[in-house]
Image 1 (cartoon, rainbow, N blue to C red):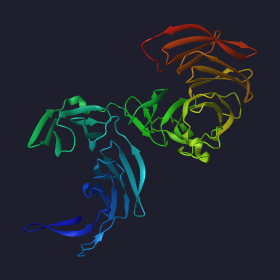
Image 2: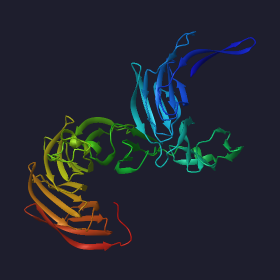
Image 3: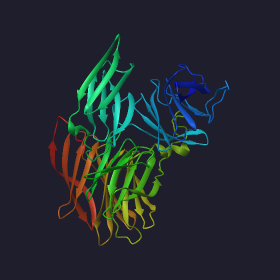
Image 4: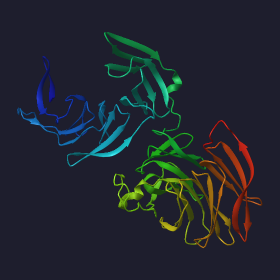
Length: 467
């Protein structure tokens, strides 16, 4: 390929070659998209096999016929359907692929460095273009046999037409409240015009996660959510802020009364965020990785994707809960339940540090944890956890150590929801895959809680309760 320089003369427009480029060897040697980086020093190309290539541009017109090789190439980044768009924005390079993903790069020392990957909309696998209109992000994409235009912030589809799906030439124009769409449906060129109703471009004050949402909590007038796309979103009535920081999915959130948000998920990652008074953004104040007590035994199948030194990376924090601390050394206590069956109690200090206090193993994936101060006089904590085996496990914790344990099987399969209400007659509410909602009672002896007694079961035979 080549780069072309154009200039205007009194007799019209003229053009002459500036640079020549060559693509690395690949099965399908043609380009699908290109852009000149904002500094005009680099050219970024996307190819038919999903690869991205970076070239340096010549500042002055050259008569050299030598073809330039790429400074940096990443092959197959967006899959076999290729890259549909490359653009430069705020000193970053964005690539949009027909695998439904968007990737962000920065250019460092003549190389492309991946900064972020995300999926703008769950279930969409063929994105053609992203565009900003009226401060909103608009996505053009094929879904099955249809071409659609959707506002990402609201999730509202403003245009949809049956056209036969991807692998065709097309163009679209949004102008004066109408969408004009032209496409080739062999052997004809067809055009479609549709009116946009006035409320479809309205900003709804929310930003969508790119895929499923795993957890949501309230803090004053904020709704905080964490999702499979590795991000947190703080929603208020008139705006939303999306926060990155996790390298894997965010499975659970909990918030303390003093404005600390705890988030956790894949790779054993646990983070603490400070919620400022104006609640416009979250400030990361602590980052902690939970190192599992469970190790892969010697002689385990060597095809396992993590070796023994890194086996902890495969553990997910499935549930979090926190409570205020009566201990002068900590602001609050945080309970974590892991996918390998381990339960941890951590203390969080005024210096924004996590301190591991104790752990216990329930041998089945933890689905929910609940933590509360059951006796303020003796500073006794009660930590309840539920598992995929239908069990409830209780730990009475005194002076940062386990005083006693109890276990009780309530459901015939996994427990998906767990709640606790203390008072004169403490009660535990659980819901499970077996379709049952069970209310149980706890009794106390010397300020320590003893096994549950099932007092009422609500059956729902036709569905599984999720939360």
